[in-house]
Image (cartoon, rainbow, N blue to C red; front, side):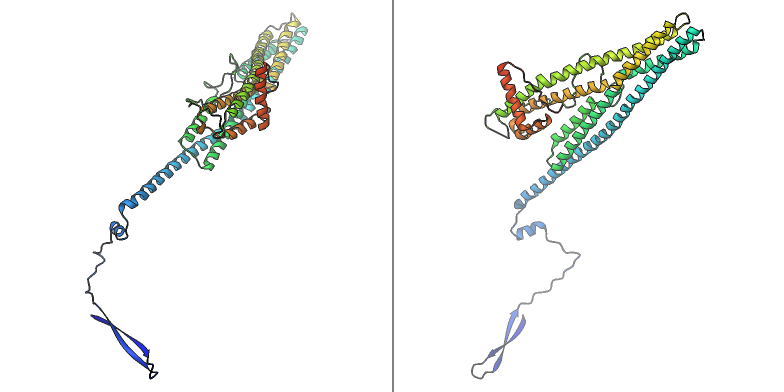
Length: 418
């Protein structure tokens, strides 16, 4: 036994002296156990948990939750990575369509100026040949030069009218704007942070739909410039399935039966006024452009053939190629200088915009209420796209309902923008 000694001083009441008191505490002496670091074992986690009152069953749920959270975070990171990949592709598309749009706009300017200069030069030579024929001068040089120039102008004009550079440039401008819009939409989704697999699928579908609507190459996939019937531009993916709508008179997710009826009435005005008007204008411009596209090369062709028959026997033989060349120059300047192809594409794009609005409203109303975008937010977006306030949009819906009851037409268009 080992003893621990302590000393204390207890004052004595009688003598006022301090008397030392000795006390001892006996502590048992433990035997020394040899301890080696090389042979020591760290207590296991299981032993630690048992000694501290924990059990494996108590800790397992937290481990499972941690694993699930890790899987969820990794899946979200994968979705964000996929969206970033799509975002890079969209940014590249924006740059490509912008550059090609500028190039094709330059085509329109350069080809127009070149063809007009060639045609005017050929017409001038045909006129000079007529004057020379009256004086008996040799005509071979003038006839050959004007014939070759008219032939070159005819070939270039056929190609130019076939591809319609002004329309090609407008297509690329629209594609650039729509890809930038998609780029901003993806960036907004990533910034908000709530992304899922459906967002990736929708972004992919929109990119592919835009690629199909506004192709970059000219050969094989170029949009038909003179279709038999005026068609709307379609740059959004088609919806493959719909769910049954939940009809309820009470407001739910910002939706109500009154809001659905309001949107249907607005779309009725869009269909009867805006889309029909752009169909009419588009068909008119398409017919004019097609007529001029045929008349220009035809006149230069006539001038090319007429220049061969210029002779000294009649000064009138030079009138036909000169007049035909001048008329071809005027027609070519009106068609391509006025950019009728661009106007036709603009009408096609505007009609497609209203058709997209109509399909968007129909698909949204057919969806389940819980899966729809908030009704008030959807109504505000629609009003802004049409250039109206919310009160103006509701007034338009009332006018549409009253006009249908009275059997009259609405006296205004749905869109105030264009």
